[in-house]
Image (cartoon, rainbow, N blue to C red):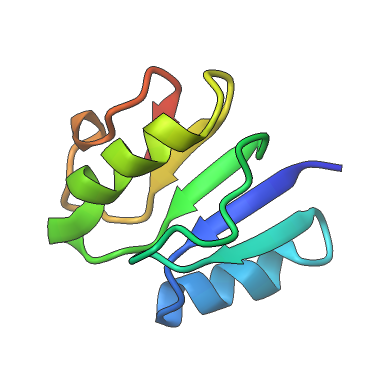
Length: 89
């Protein structure tokens, strides 16, 4: 079963957690402290404000392994805002 960590507990994060919870091992992560972030998660979804994506992705990149996919949920921010080689939007 895939391990998905959702960073951000706002409206988008809340809905993603509930949508994926039947299909994967889903974990809610506090975006300010990254408490509960699993270093071995398969997918890390950043459901944070657009102006925080670069900052949060840099912190997450240091805490997860290289094969973790890091993606953000913004439609207006480039994938290049994610400081990780395995990334998506």
